[in-house]
Length: 119
Image 1 (spheres, rainbow, N blue to C red):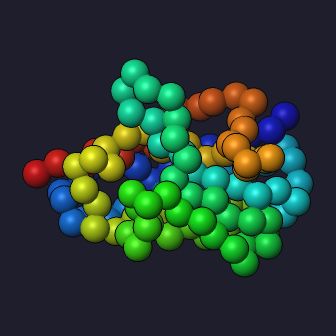
Image 2: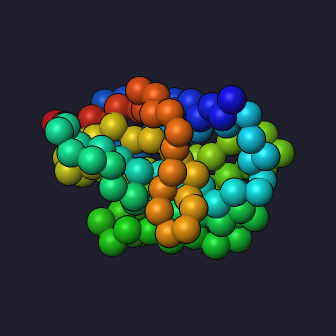
């Protein structure tokens, strides 16, 4: 069974930093492009960053470009999102997903990682 478990969320002040992790199991991690998405209350998830299977190519939504960095450790089956210069509008629940055919995919959605940016 495919499992993706996010961790590392929390509450920070504007300008602060957080690092999210996503521990993955149940599939061949190194074969898949992966993504981070975030979800505001009452809204569907939106993609914010994508990384290819080798970790050699990354893409960012304009709203996080220059502030967030996606990375992966294929030896440890773990995906990361380093978030810096956080803004109140970054407050959301963050999920990791597969990236397939130009869109995110996840069979079962967990709780994700809550990120709250507030002074």
